[in-house]
Length: 391
Image (cartoon, rainbow, N blue to C red; front, side, top):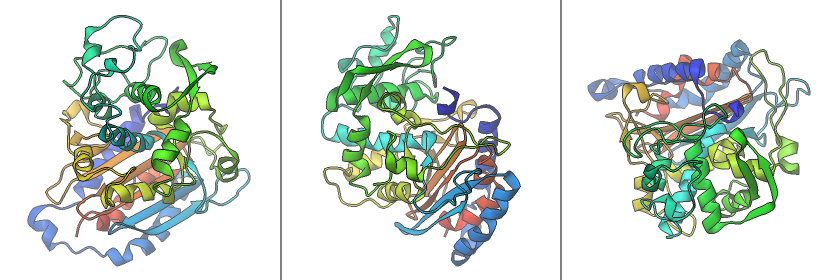
């Protein structure tokens, strides 16, 4: 399951170091008022800078979308979808979003909470039996809020050597957990979707997963209403036609996954989204500059709750160099305004999105390489993107 795991080890250290440098470039207080940023040069700068960084890092392909003042201001593909075919990345190229998928799922869950399908603070044991193989009374205290803020106590991903278990009292501390997202996804399917008991597969540590309609559910309840028609979780002809292929650190193409319904039932919430940078930017716009609430969009109260820090992160707990974690989003708190962000990484793909709610601006970048972080996390790129976050 390494390909589905969030960035760890040296990759996570590099990410945190980059983000620390990124944030250090954003001035605060009086210095922020004295600094002049040339936002008009943002696109020309990125157009020249990104290809150079890609060449230095041997990244075959990258797609970027820039949001400014609540609108998509620029989208561009660089490089190639596949080092073998040399087919260029374009506006339709679909990448694996990896853990950036979690933001989409979190939004969909909060809308179901708003509709009364599931309670944000209700014990999840009310809706489904425990996924644990042994009794643990702490399980009865886990809620959807705990899942979305990574405070369930579950580890990131179970394995044969590390079976699923609760490591601390839920709500008491932070520990990034894909397993929590999977369990909440299974509950959402039980309450608002369907399962096919005749189509099942075995995954980590022998867990048996049956196909569900999570792809259809998320398309109907979020992707299509938000205009994300190129995005999805289950392989189809459109994804096959536009998919970027993964590459390892040496630039060698890796096998491209073709997720089935059982794969989506296991990984959709954790990291199963296939999307374009322009599609994801449509979602980012709904977060940064929300339209009025409707059957798919959150009301103001729940939108604000989504971006409200739920737990402060201690030094040893920090992910994405965040100060806190909200519901689906990491939060970096600055005097100039909070920055929301999420990164993702799985075999052959790296992704990053950041946004300023105050400025209604941000970006999403998707790459098809294990070395994509060397572009996404480069200090020169951070400096170039500063106009999105500071006036």
